[in-house]
Amino acid sequence: MPLNDFSIIESTLREGEQFVGAEFTSDDKVEIAQALSNFGVEYIELTSPCASPNSRADCTRVASLDLSSKILTHIRCHMDDARIALDTGADGLDVVIGTSSYLRDFSHGKTIDEIIDIASEVLTYIRTSAPPIELRFSTEDSFRSTNEDLMRVYKSISDLNVVDRFGLADTVGVATPFQVTDLVRTLRQITDADIEFHGHNDTGCAIANSFAALNAGATHIDTTVLGIGERNGITSLEGLIARLYASEPSSVRTKYRLHQLHELNQLVADKVEIEIPFNHYITGVTAFTHKAGIHAKAMLNNPDTYEILDPADFGLTRYISIAHKLTGWNAVQDRAAQLGISIEPENLQTVTRHIKALADHKRLTLNDVDELLHQWEDVVNRSGITAVKEEQDKETR
Ligand code: HCA
Ligand code: CU
Image (cartoon, rainbow, N blue to C red; front, side):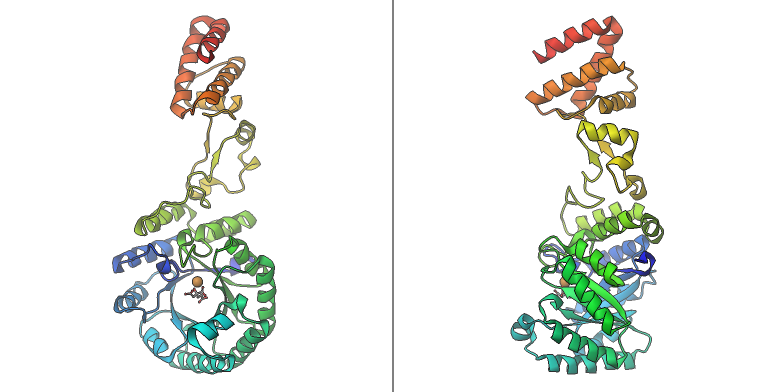
């Protein structure tokens, strides 16, 4: 897969605004858009200008900012929406209409033929009114639409030659990577246009589905910071970056300012009043924390043994946890060295056994271990190994 050819459509300011905790002010949107642009995402997608008066004003404001990222706005497939969106000055319009029987029967009530008619009218109007605009057409709930319906819609629109990009949306997070691969390949057979994938994460497949889409020929992936969106959200920016970095680190390092990722996460987490989840990709607090003694020993010899992502590339540091019963003497030795304490390996093994025995009885902190190391250093310096052993016997008794 030529990784340089893909683009991120960052939708924190559109899909992310559909997260229940998101209430971005106009200034928030400017701050987030600037941070996303500085990070290096190729596109920033904003809520429809038809959603509310402020949404419209904010869309125009962000579009006028002169950011490096292109600004897109997202609209329903309606002539009125198209007219308003064209006035915002956005670089591109993302047009969407539902094609599954759920959305046809319970949302907009249109048949496939009516969908083709209205989409043809709206997309042709946009292209004629704004020849240079980047125009995308997508089907909502693509993965619960029939292949026949979908391809009939895409083929009709493709024949108009007015669209730059087609989107596939896993609106309810039902798709598997195999289904995504199949559908992207099928769409690729009827169009040379770019292909975008938008995947919800209800069943935990959003990142894998996005990666499968790219491998099958998609060119654009939708993300949000921390994955925020409707329900439990979509492909997170961090998860996609981690996945792509694991395959092709040099491209990802070149395309994005990875050192800014943590700060960007914190900015959005603060705005929507959540914590960064402890196990989040790259920026979660335990993402680079190692615990078991066996892991710690190998990590100290060569971090690649248990890390496919280098925390230094993200301006982060790894942490080896030693205050527990699974600890090992190599990690304890490393901690002693950090504290400037020199203890012979044989004595360190004794100290380590001591830590394990204590941890069997109570939860230890790093401070506890540090104190022990200081105490043992004193004891060793005073009277050698015999005193150390006596000391250990006393403490674990
Ligand atoms: C939504 C719509 C959407 C649109 C995706 C797209 C989806 O739920 O509001 O335009 O590609 O998930 O289908 O976000
Ligand atoms: Cu969505």
